Length: 436
Ligand code: GLU
Image 1 (cartoon, rainbow, N blue to C red):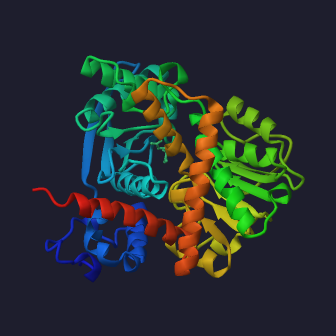
Image 2: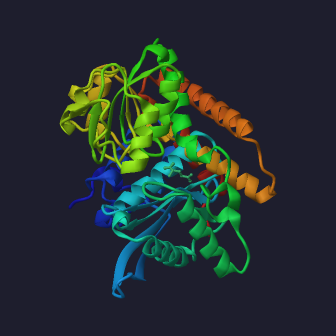
Image 3: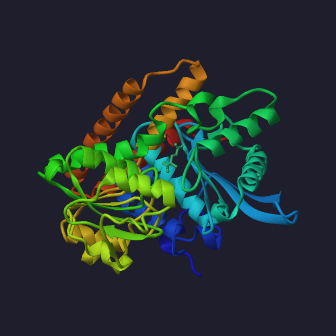
């Protein structure tokens, strides 16, 4: 495939490997398009933009484990450090059967943007293993996690790159990661991962932080478009740590959660789903399937549900050119990373639907990860009220700054967030200069 003129700059005279090509489909291709859209707004810093179009470092690891039945299985794992100009790499680890290198590259790049957008002193990184963790026993999952941590141990560390939970990973997995890294180092290194159990140096409020951040920016955005949260009808895709918590907070504020979709199906109730009961059902049965206090909808009908706020909080590329015209909401708040394709972004924009992009909407998780990392370094722990208050302040200030940039340049909130973030990253890049 030929290089496009955009990639054929003075700094990249050689043909790009296929996975870096802007025509590459999937999450990485989407990220590259987002960078291209922002480049005209970067002024003289645009001479450094190529640095954003390739990860600094990508490690592919073989993760062999012994299964409970005595046979051996091999899984492929990754850790990608997209950029470290503003500080150590930071970003989660996902365990999912569809994980690929280029997906992890895109997720690591979105972490660079997100961390810079809320002005955390971190670069961007992400990791993953291509595995369906539901097929593993607890012992197999622990062995998988420990071997993966050992393999990526050569590039992570409290001042180098700090993993955290993401899709299908949790506090227990972070505890195993912290322990494995610490055993290899010969010293307990609690700051090597965030999202740990509170008993191991984790932070109060971390588990709810991403959902709380989604709710906070939702409140701010609603004010701007004159939407009363107390009267709003909400539809949520994904009912885990992000969608479940966000739905709970919106419902507590008086909103009506009319539809919830997850991997098990779609439930709908025009008068409002009982969110605590649905959370209880999901923790007992693993999905919304079988919840009796509501109707079951065919999955495709979820997108056309009559609502004011749509929260995609599952996986990438859910809102596409095929369903964007069905959406009834006045705004979309991206709890997931990369849920909207660029074509769908344009359709929503033309239809006057406000999109609050992932790189600000779901930044609450990594913001409290930052608090956890700071607490671990100082071994001094804050109260939950203090954490939530600081989280809300950072999210509100970041959102207000991005709204102003969007207004100034007449661009979408996504492009505005990229302008703010890329400017910060490339300023740091320029100040540090090239080594050697
Ligand atoms: N996985 C989360 C995200 O996508 C959190 C990352 C972190 O806390 O480092 O933002």
